Amino acid sequence: MSDYSPKPEHKFTFGLWTVGNIGRDPFGGAVRDPKTPAELVRLLGEVGAYGVNFHDNDLIPIDATPAEAEKIKQEFRKALDETGLKVPMATTNLFYDPIFKDGAFTANDPKVRAYALQKTMNAIDLGAEFGAQVYVFWGGREGVETDASKDPVEAIRRNREALNFLCEYVLDKKYAMKLALEAKPNEPRGDMYNPTTGHMLAFITTLDHPDMVGVNPEVAHEHMSGLNFMHGVAQAWEAGKLFHIDLNDQYPGRYDQDLRFGSRDLKAAFFLVKFLEDVGYAGSRHFDAHAYRTEDFEGVKDFARGCMRTYLILKEKAAQWHADIEIQELLGEIDTLDSSMASFFGKYRAAKAAALKAQSFDRAAIARHGLKYERLDQMTIELLLGVR
Image (cartoon, rainbow, N blue to C red; front, top):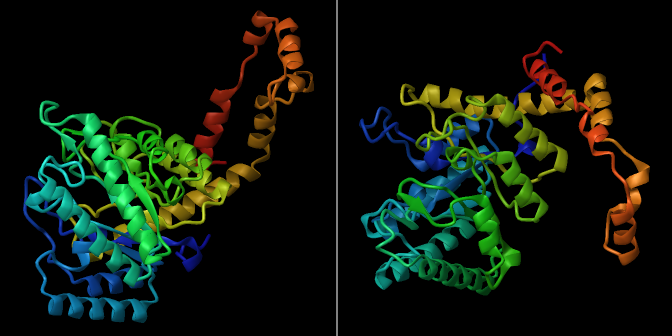
């Protein structure tokens, strides 16, 4: 039997808010007692994770005194040293506190926007203190319930101004840190600005320092709106902007479920893992998911182990897919190399365009050719089901 134990080179990470989730939802209270950040680090060390990520207020409560904050940081640092866990990513909670009910960087009240900048600078300092090299921005309240409340163009400008300011702050502080933007179509706002990874990629091109800003796509956020997550990841990768990734699972068209990775759509998870491994993605594999509300903390450990184990099983399946002779022979038939067409592709030249316009194509004959995608997909399913 293969060894699916996580190792440091797999770079599996969890947020304090994931394993620390106490099972509260809109219809029911907590089912698990809170644990301290240090206790959660030790839990992650026990299950074999590589790292732990945090929002500022996952680590330091928003109303903590300086003395309380220092004590928490000392305990957290001690737990990191004991377990060897890293802190690859940090972020700011700009959505929970009532001050952010109308957003943070896009809020209509300038005092809210100023406070959001102040809070984020302090949180960037906190992330840098623990070695975070990626800083994620999820605009959880950056949106509207009614378009009567905000001019969307002005909201875009406010968001751009904030990110430009924070890029300059990171540069001024000489932090070795990249910024990653995370998209979501809706929830908790009725409609969110920059709702998909594609929107974020376009927005990044308008910033003053686009080179230091990328994306943090999340499985659930793209699946909520029925999109193919792997395609968004591929677009981010091709653009050189895949700075971080959030792995979980999700039924399309539902609220943000944050299910255990691979627990809902194995085929989508397989092609995602295959893509990440094929292109050599070297960043963290961050599991932004929650254990079921039915679980105690032993169940939380089962959840965390399950996320990592499923990734490694699918990584093995991807290697089997590449090694499967019949699948590879069929791929060779499907992705044909027709040397007679080679001269028509690549950089434009007038002579090339003229030759292509003169070329004769037998459309009916080309269209009659079956592509055998059904067979290829069934072989992939059988491989995933363990009968190949």
